[in-house]
Image (cartoon, rainbow, N blue to C red; front, side, top):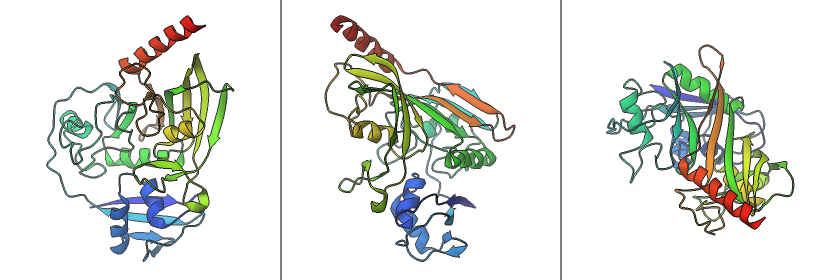
Length: 312
């Protein structure tokens, strides 16, 4: 059985292997290069023979990914904070300490292990290694994440994410006080030129891809600010990179943050996937959920409010 992906290039891009690695983050760049060598990638109906070709606007890509070899995944009875569930779809409020899928060093205690116990029929949906996982959240980002329970749901939600019809809204606490009440960051994002584990603002001509983040201040907290973010695109680490670039990094971000301590014990960056809205794959109705922020997030806000009131 093959998993097939269909993509249409929206802007002149870098090499095809880099484009696919960023568009399909569950596939590593080396895995994509391997698939190209195996003739599993087509561009405009013709088999792609080189990982180095540059893409143009309107190019249509078909990618065939052979079924993943099963891992020894064990179902584990891990409590889940369920926001919505029916026979097609499951939406959870992910805590910061729950890794999404097994990887070296995290073979147990992941979201996938928990899902296998909750949904025994899940293996095979979207690939054995990551059953049902349609999109992902960074390890320490909390909040709403959608899980497909059928192949139909998997393909439908994936298409919504690629077409940007699914709406993802976040709450984040940042350092500093923006001068305006709202704004838009329109800066391309790509792999960091020196550190391949990080993302960065990278010009389009150097391989960056369009990334747009809308933001609006929810609450001013002295030298900190609670911001509501809405993604127009969905690049890896997009909010974290954009926030840092405009001089207001997310509090507690170990990669893009300032390194300053706020005196609050945070499990990671103070960024929460607050609201998720998508179309039901069968009924076509809109499903919208709101995920309650974790205790560490609300504690941070309470402490910053007290500090702000004392200093005012």
